[in-house]
Image (tube, rainbow, N blue to C red; front, top):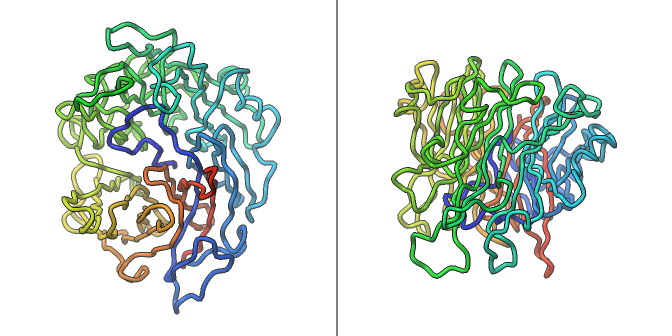
Length: 493
């Protein structure tokens, strides 16, 4: 769940940068759909997928979203949906109407946090007992950790902590977890240092990205923490230094206590480039196998540390060290944008291929399938473990989502264009690694969707009924900006 998160830029100029809007949309079919169309257009014969007319308005639901946004969702067993919306979680029933599920007063109070603080939801997940885990960060007043100002009026970073709320299936806070259902922790990470090496304030600056549970019910969290401020290596004049972050993986016991058997005090990374898997500035998209081994994806890398910091995949053993049998010393380098676990415990990961002339060349994506326990490429998939697809032309083209359907086929999601000319694009690859070129014209389904954010978060998943949902961010077109949460549900034949 929640692959894909809002930290997918190779470099972030600042950890304070956040996107204004939440956009959830799914689009699959053999026709083009207008972004504002109220009705589905005529479908060609033998459609592969259509908007679900029983959901929202002709398959689409639009909701306002608060700032800062997140683009995550999970499906409930009864056909409903939970979506993150800034500092809260919205519950929808099977037709897209508001629902009381998981909406108890206690849970709302827990999400609101203490007076003066803000809570931003970054991921949602169900555990094997049907309990909902809400991951986010508590943002404290910037005055507690003074950092240099930005031209926008904000600060280079904001002091923060990880907060996890666990709700029972009836929506009540789980009294067996943390303090009355809530865990708020700094994971033992230290505040950032300034350019002179001095600690800035009493709090760390942590950005959690994703949450998952392992077969023993332990909770795995990924993210990044600001470790220092440094001068820009590109030599440009700047009002403020650049924040450097270190990615981390943390594991908690089922009751919310740190799992001291994992890493150092329950954490791997988060303190420096050398101790972070891949030397990454952020980590996310955790996949956990039956043994408890954790495969994560780098969501950012240091522009100034190209020799020590890389985009790629890393695999940790159940107690935290890198798994030496995975790739080279536990890592595989590359601009991977998403990964998903198959039903036979393999991993399919997707990366972008280089485009020397993006204004003229189509974006291509390469999928690899890694088998376990030997972690080599699965030769039965595609061409000796690899499959390449042509995503589409356009400078502002990105791929960022993967989902697996009940037949083992792989859905690939992304976007093309910018502002009023942006579109959502989907492709499908068979279980055996064959690009299904009959899935829409030229093997692609393109849906015009104005306002898609260039570097927004995304999520794509199937519900228990086999219906597909795709999550994206968009910006409003009004003079005041804004944006919203758009949810579309699709039926696949």
